[in-house]
Image (cartoon, rainbow, N blue to C red):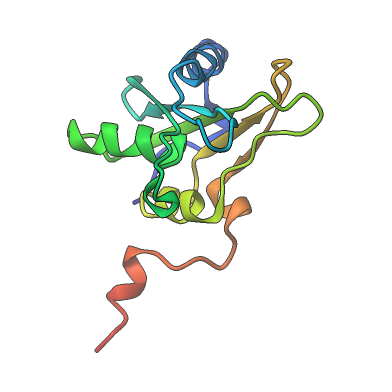
Length: 146
């Protein structure tokens, strides 16, 4: 999906809100197996924020990441145009980075939106979905089949 503004155009007030929201979402993480809580906050094109946390399951493959939780909440409420997502965990020395599955789910909704990867200290780096998943496969590729 085409996005009208470049990913870097997220206003400071939204960045701050995303960072706070993902930290708050992390508090709800259900992670008794990995003990690795993750929170995510997703900004829609019109400024609404959806948060999510990781939810583990004793049948490990049925667990879901925070990023996908936030995206699925947004989509289930009718939102499909995203500007940014912020991700956090308890890591102090490294930035919280989305897994490959989450990157592919993000890609479903475009390539030119921002991914804020944070440390527990509040420091962050930002990349686009395109930078995190170059040469990706997306919905438009299905149209290439004849």
